[in-house]
Image (cartoon, rainbow over all chains, first blue to last red; front, side, top):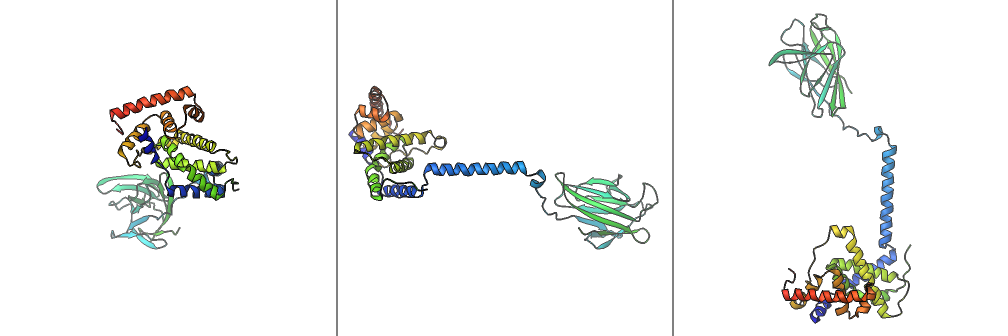
Length: 208
Length: 164
């Protein structure tokens, strides 16, 4: 077993390692940072963190911990002038929405396109008049009454008819547009429609 | 609050120079890894430096160092962290002579209970009775382990399957 003894003799702590042992031992003895102390401190900190976490979960109401929605960048609401020109509505700027009369058979109402990058569902509700959906390629009009759900980017039609198929027209309507994402409201806008001369209507997007 | 030390810096330096190699060999015999052996040595030096009772004889001190080193190694091997993230055994690269390296590698391939007996008997020169006292084993058990270890070593050396 001489070869074993000779081999094992070569396994030793280098001078650098010995100096490290001395320094580390002195350091640990002077600061009192023994392994037990470090473990105790770690355990105490972990326990404190757990207590704080439990207290937070138990005592903060769901409304306080609910995640606030990101600032809503808003809708892009496009109306169309009498000549068909697209007009993006700006807050507090009155723009002509075009002409509509129940006698006009070409469109079921004044077209308003509502786009939003953030919403996955949009609810449009009107105080007066009626809403409907219509696609020129699909000649069928879908009456929706005073409220409808739509995907962002869709064009809805607002008709000033007080009741369907009547010639009685409203002079004013408030259109509420509400954006939802994952069934949570993320923003809303109000559009006020007012009758101008004859069968012409103006729209004004209200400031938040 | 800082611990009261029973050793001056000179004492500590002397302790390290007196026992560092012994600790490294015992720890390496158990762990087969220099980095882990170094950590064990550091822990044992701290325990030794914090020990309030001074040893009356050098042999007692040496025996204490061996026993504590073995215990720290066993604790390390039992730790879940060590079981999950066991470093790759680094063989015996530090041994220059190839034939010596082969013999040491054969010993390190033995089960831990045989390795430490071989080390204490052949390197440290302890008797089987002293080894039994150090390891808290029956002397006959130590003798049997020594015999069994020799047989395994012989098979390893004759077979020439060192490090395979």
